[in-house]
Amino acid sequence: MADSSTDGRSAWVSAAWCMFYGAGIIGMLVIYGLLQERIMSIPYGGELFTDSVFLVFCNRIVAIVFAVSMAAGKGEELVNKAPLWKYLAISFSSVYASACQYEALRYVSFPVQMLGKSFKMMPVMVWGMIVAGKRYGMVDWMIALAVTGGVTEFLMTGPISSHGSGNSTHGLLLLAAFLLLDGFTSTFQEKLFKEHTTSKYNQMMYINMGSAVISSSTLLLSGKVGSALGFAAAHPAFVTDAGMLSAAAVGGQWFIYSQVKEFGALVFAATMN
Image (cartoon, rainbow, N blue to C red):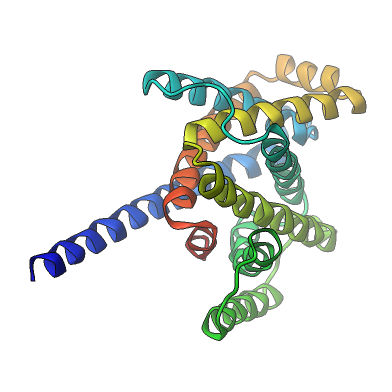
């Protein structure tokens, strides 16, 4: 009887933490999304910012500082717990998922982008089968299909363009690429947590280090470093918005890593609904 009571309390505590992480994810992503839309679709002094990978780079630098500080504060070792290529695989998908997400806001509105993220369950389930060899029951697939169908119907019955942009199809394709890449990211993160017992700060540090290298290399190869820095120098309001965006991104990462570590990628995908 005592064991049953203890199990009941543990289940309630676990559910409370899951809801806490879920609320944190949604809260951070709303702030993050609003700042994204402001930066990518509203001009600063009549000039639009177009170098989305620069924002990814800024976010990753702030995240590295946060992760290293937290790991050091908790006395964790800073050495990699998993092979570096596994961190880099997540870094690659994370960088280009973020870039697709930013670019999509030039063509579709913020509410459409947030609604589109409700498609996340299906990609996560497919990646779970490919990456981790998972199997899902009929009920899981029916729920995912019902959510996908409902969101699709809702999207098809209203305006989706961002600030009058007519190229919404391009925006939807970018959202689809984001969902594909982001589904891989959270699934592979879960795999690392289970197979290599990495801490969330260890993953956050190495994945963001890899992301910083990938995003900075992309900026250098595209020749956009000068234009991004010039835009920042010319528009102090942009620097403020980018700083707040990075803070929201790091907060969102902490909640996401916590939920994926303790409850899995599919629970995180369901949270986005």
